[in-house]
Length: 114
Image 1 (cartoon, rainbow, N blue to C red):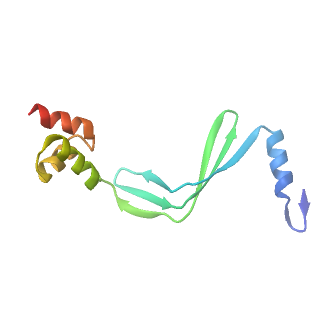
Image 2: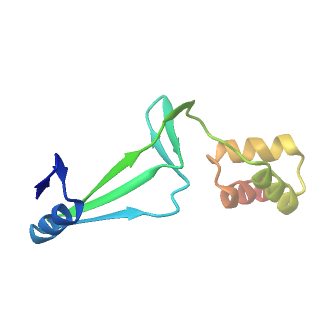
Image 3: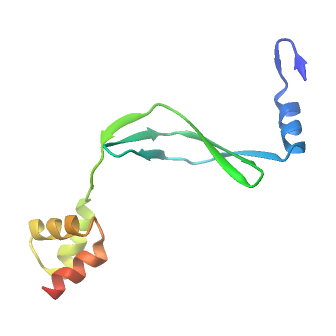
């Protein structure tokens, strides 16, 4: 297992498998977002490894985190969709989305009922 000052990754993997530990790397991860009460940690292009042992999964995330204020982000596409369906102005559409925490369908229903 030890050779020239390090571990043989293949032997370590084999030993872990014998102990019932499965690991895999997730591919095509675009970003990982960790939401805290007052901010978000965003890790773009993160490497994520999933380890499963005794039926429980552990996710290991590697990458550089960026902090950003948490809050509701409403996209222009969402606003346009509400406008298209309800024929309201942009500000009314944005307010409806904010009131429904970004739920497009509920915002449209609320505007059509009023």
